[in-house]
Length: 619
Image 1 (spheres, rainbow, N blue to C red):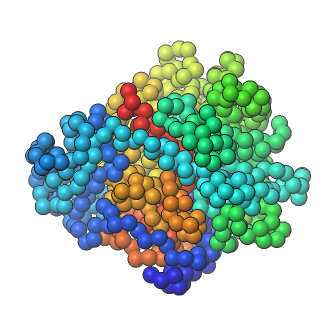
Image 2: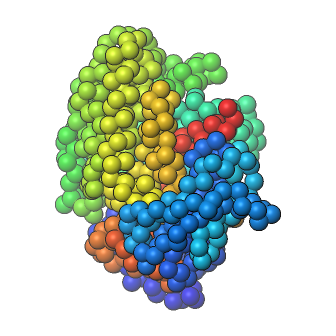
Image 3: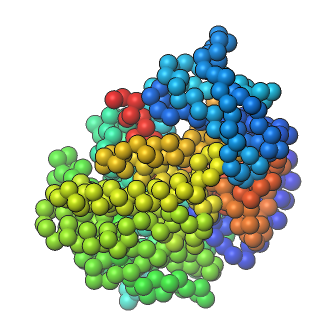
């Protein structure tokens, strides 16, 4: 498609009446250049009636190894076998057993080759189907977590190391919806939430905690190739903690005093222009490229125009802040005691605000009626309390953490087939693991393990298909998958056993290619396979897909959701058209803001799991 026709097609969906923020934002104005052509890979399988889908990163020698047949016509081969690089059969023939339908797959089948333990390259052969090459290697996940960190760095505001520029948002922000409205306060920093440049504490605090936890639990898998500013050069600190510190420093600015927490910078008015972050010309009434608003937690419904959220407290934001600050103290106190002391003070004050104002602090809409509809908050306070107990040893924190845990033993989305936008955020509750770590009595520890087991079982019970995928296909389905896998990792690390090792691995396999479309869901990674090449991102559109390397995309959604979106339209022909004929769709297209937008918090969650898998190979 020419640049002119691409712009014309893009223009068809620019007149959205509903501007969406964050996970599925409204499209920006039409870019000046056409999308990057998609790579030819496993996903672009033409009109094939069936295909074998595999994890493009590869499989660990001692881990589960399962490929999946997606048969659009419902016809499956009778057997499959595994051959080595010389063509010799090393496994099989084994029978192929029919499994349930999903998306365009009228039937699926699991090709289990876990018995293959030797490292090497193998071919999966199943009847007359096109054979597929797979890799078994101890290094399958090596370096992957650092690759995902590349995306986090290019999402930075204040100073963006990818652009090597102090971006426009250094003028953030003017206070709104508060007694101090109109006052400037320096809250520049942090990360853009997704392809737009809105910034939310709720997602950023969760991302910060996930990266702190990854650095704490799996330090040996990360490199030290970038400094605090995200520029090339070692500084004696693994890069995941450099990135986490960037988040902590912004969170401190967003909690400037004991009685005030800010929750959000900018709103959906940001979507009116197509710009890079250093040339952003959004206009909030103070001139193009001028100030942006910063919204406080207020404990009441919020929105400057007709649309209002349903906020009723501070605790969802305050609890996440407290947890990140408290864990940050333990990570940084030896390296930077002064910084750690500030974090310790802010951890207490944030948690106190959560206790004083229980309830959810939702994101604020601007001109749009859409917002993050987070309604859960006790999980956030549980994690904050548990981390404060780990920091201080004060018994009341652990008691409060256990009380919160009992109120929400299972994260509510688990086992459901739908939910509102970010209704049960975060999708994984690290609080149960933190309580388990702190509890001295076996009964409390066992209770936390059981809570995780219930959630994992609820999702697994819905996974009646060869991909063993039982999540609801709402916006950010990949975030849910990464969160499910995280809970599986935490469950195993808490001594829960291997009962969910298979479904956990299946979630990771899906993200990296074992899905109906045969594509990795991470932008430009791995570069040797099919990956999102046309994400809904101005950075990728203007600078090339490599600009968003490592970003986890939203992921597939129910076709009914996709069809309900106002004005959405693909810019290029759908290379996955034959695989989008079912009830779940995914498009590698700049025009699909519902399935193909990279997301900051989902990427951070995935960093934790990828690091866990790389660490497994080193044992």
